[in-house]
Length: 172
Image (cartoon, rainbow, N blue to C red):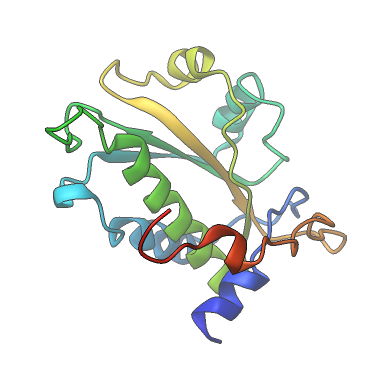
């Protein structure tokens, strides 16, 4: 399958089976994140794997968007470790975490797992529930598992603006 075919096939899964994700598949997804590029290759991210019953119960107190997935990955960034652009102070931490998250989403789709990118969670509750150090900022949550038989893309999934509407050559 071509990369663009994989990217088109992937969709936000909001309904999972109870089947646990095999360790080898979880590690495949995590390895894809590890291989992702970051600014200056500083790798200022950390991933919390939320997989046991007690941790998933705590997750439910932090967001309603857990979708009862058998595993969730909480991607956190360390802004002090991230590269900062010297001209204006723009920090790459959120961007680096976004790259990691995207790469893991696509890797999951490649091996038959579904994911949904979630940013709608209470970061204070997340910090407290999972003892997240002050140096780390929760950026993205990735519920993951096997899509249920009735899982389907959102009807708007295939809607895309034409390239002519979003790409400009040489000057705005």
